[in-house]
Length: 290
Image 1: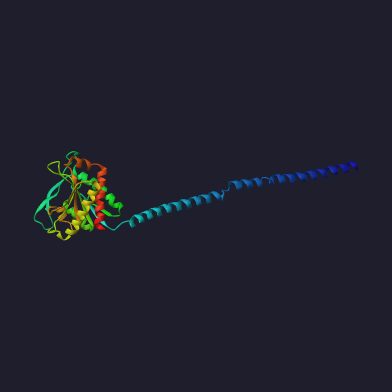
Image 2: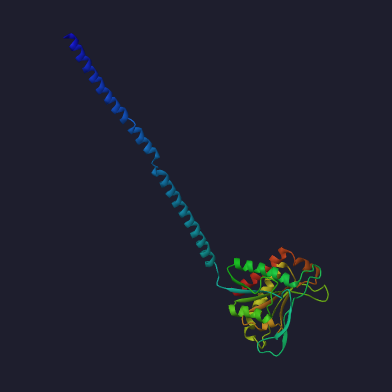
């Protein structure tokens, strides 16, 4: 009997142990589920980098918009500073003359060469057409800073534009002032100084605008000589200049100085003196149009 009870106890114990093992096995097989969930959470991308990237892109877009708007504001400001005045600048002559003939004025029977290459520095060797362009470009920049709308007849020496065609540029633009940049020359090296030129009151082609041209010429020569200290040779009136005769807007020829005079020839090749001439012409235009 005791032996039988012992066997039963052993069987019960085995059954109990077997149940515990199964429970343990179930628990051990379920345990990895939590780490797997953690791994999944680690592999799932966080929303924070996307939000940061979107924020960065938004900031970049805003900055780009500010830059664009800033550029538009600067352009609008530059346009608002325009004074509505139009100045046409003609750097006299060109690298290669055109000896073909054209009427000296509208309907004239008298003719002149269309355009020459001008004179040359006796001491510097610089051709007049180059000096004229150097000063014309400086005048362009000076007038632009002052709010003028500037039109250049030429910005290079390699052109072929007759004197009547140069006047047409100013006429077509309805210029408030047409400035023709030139330099002078003489047989000797003695003559020096600055002068301007316009037509006479009895000019058969455009005598009706004589008073305006005379006023522009006086204003410019006085202002240039104030800036440079050059001798003021005043205003010369002549009806022989086709570049003036074809004009229907206020026009003047500026003879900056003599390229046959050693001092002036040398001075006119310096950027400082060229700037003084440009500022002087601009001052003269300001006074004329005020």
